[in-house]
Image 1 (tube, helix red, strand yellow):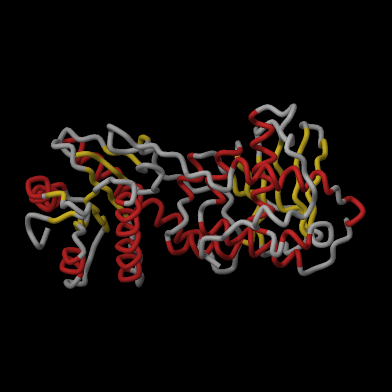
Image 2 (cartoon, rainbow, N blue to C red):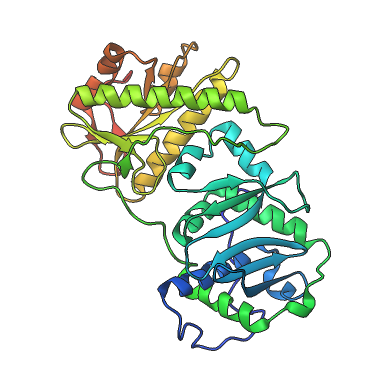
Length: 368
């Protein structure tokens, strides 16, 4: 379910289309058609042969302008305004809630990007789905590229496609054909935007915020989540302040990889940090998760030619094996919020990091 999905191929198409599908459309309109077709091809099971029998795309006017709408079974699962000013989608909640509980879904980042998790008024799968609103098409595309969100979209559309489809008479093959072609031309091979740059991070750290209305799921502990967010933010700010005292600016994200913090040291070496809160009973789980995440981020950046030293930050670590585990993986482990300890832990790396020919990183001291 969390594997990278492949879009339905261009050929066979569920409907005929002409080569002039974009005539008369401006850039935002073309992007809206492309997103609608891309979501259909990425999330609807067996999309090509089931168009008109399990799903359809329609173009309607709901009072705010032309809206492209994806309907699967009895459920409207996507709406894209041609103006590009708003996109909404319905997704299965389970993958996202699980990712939230594991710390793999960054709701603070969602908030910074203007993504809203709202109440869904539809009754179909009422307790199982979430309603997400994005301010623009680029944000929606970014959100759908997050594995839990794509998994949720695919899961919900698979459920809906297995049920009744009472809208066959509304099927317009020319709408599906145009969007199907638009997705091929504009989005299928599009790569995430490259950012980052001379500062060593994408954007200023903006802090953590918990949505007022969190998703109502039986397995989701809102109080524990809020406490974790608060501790995460406190650790981030403590590290930012520590680096600032050394004359180093830190920010969030790097080349569209969602690292918690990133910075360049005085010699221009790149660092990335994954920050993990710890609650009673989950220390080992959080350490394992944080180590896996920061190693993933290092790998993704290395594929883009960026050599980064990974740092894992936790409020405490009682298992004496973990400094060695991190050291074996060339990851710096920072504990607590104390500047003296962090200075001692980071300083050998500032002196001793060397970039190897294969893009890996070696440390001057084995226990750094």
